[in-house]
Length: 134
Image 1 (spheres, rainbow, N blue to C red):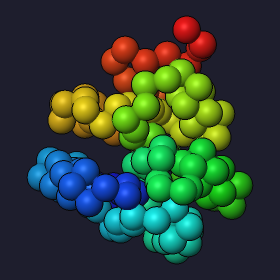
Image 2 (image 1 turned 30 degrees about the vertical axis):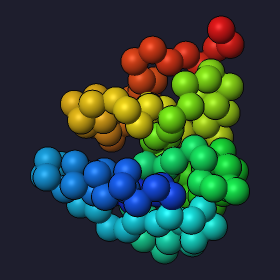
Image 3 (image 1 turned 90 degrees about the horizontal axis):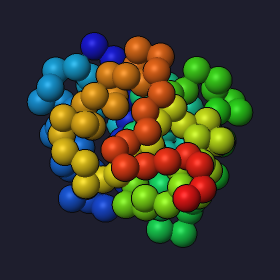
């Protein structure tokens, strides 16, 4: 079992992700955050195996947040979770060090597949998404 930190500014999404991850038995949620800056310090303190990171955290960009832990902690695995299907967002998160990108409205099966793929060293780009400009 590995450790997961969840970062999303929408409480309902955050609660759903906690339930999904913990009910599978594949991971333990060690921290949740709703604010990007707090998430950075929590990630560096908790050192989770995987961070599920919202791309838009109110006034904070998930891309900026993704870059900070990666500079200080090279082993961080990040999965971007977003409502934005635009390839600019996908490319931005991958370039910032995310191992994957998926949409919030993907089903539980795809979310779990993405988590397992990334934890096994792979990369995940969700259904219907592209890193390249359309």
